[in-house]
Image (cartoon, rainbow, N blue to C red):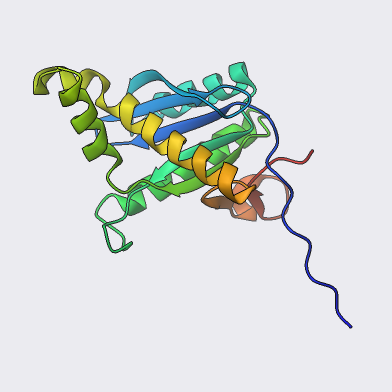
Amino acid sequence: MSEAPLPPPAPRRGVRLGVDVGRARVGLAASDPDGILATPVKTLRRDVRKGSDRRMIVREALDRDAVTVYVGHPVNLQGRPTASTQDAVDYAGALAMELLRAGSRAGVRLVDERLSTVTAHRQLHEAGRNSRQHREVVDQVAAVQILEQALTMQQSLQRDAGRPVHIPAAESNEGEDVTRDQPDS
């Protein structure tokens, strides 16, 4: 008689970061260590050539001792890839690599971000901000949306939300493939 597989371990306590990747800007949000509240942190100017935006996220992850970084995975309403999907996947992979090289044990996971920016614009409009004022903070608000969704899923499923980012062995410098998932306890 075969035994049923063990359920995945419950998520560890610790700060989680949410990242909304855009072509021009990147929004960043953080949770409290208990994963109850997500708050905006900052909006970073996207630096495709030098990656200074990713380095700033790595610094935040290290400073906050983050256990997981959730990167928004843009898909359409049917769950299919969009023009931005591969960009977000590539960004998450590069971020996972930089976290690994910096000695962070934070896992990187892609989480469905359907309508996060639309919802962020609506919330800002309802809060009385005009469209010109949105640009300054919409990416942070979208990152909060992504993180809140991940935290809600994590709490209901009792495991980390989304899917882990995989780093091929050739890039990991560890001699084997590395999945930037939930860190070891």
